[in-house]
Length: 203
Image (cartoon, rainbow, N blue to C red; front, side, top):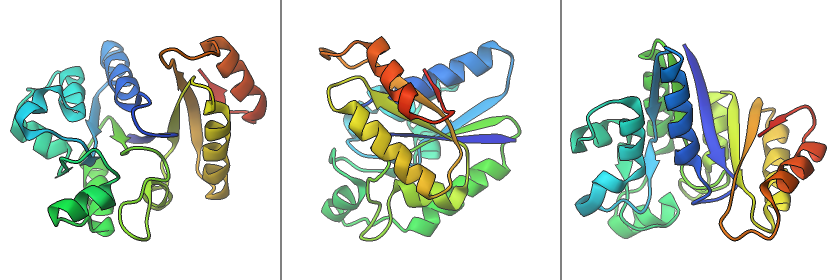
């Protein structure tokens, strides 16, 4: 079993798009793959067919059904906010250890590649003390960092890489997702991040 954690420099950067693309690539090569996105913010129960977990299910070739969404994304919040804020609004706080155990059970029960997609950016809080980075530190999985190509992304990306390095996390790759209307080209952004990202694949 191989597991990879997919995180980002911020929200709406393209994590789910990248995760779905990896799923299709692995399936196309004949590999076994599964995916979970434990926590989802901005989840509309009336339009769940367009949600991130629904996109992952479609890429996996699994039924895009609400019970399947609930299975891969147990913590779903309506407000498009950080999980700790969204949870407070709904009176449902996240227990960090529960998220850890859900990820570990998913890892133990999977025979192929398991992709774990985080929520928001790498420093998004789950509660008053813990962030996505803390979950990554506990799971100790290779990580893919997704970043945009917008102005400011170089600072955001290098900052994220720095905090990951300080936790001794294995950074498998940085994926630059093209941002709409960016003044910098995708190629310029990739080349710049590559110069500063020591021996890390940047695509």
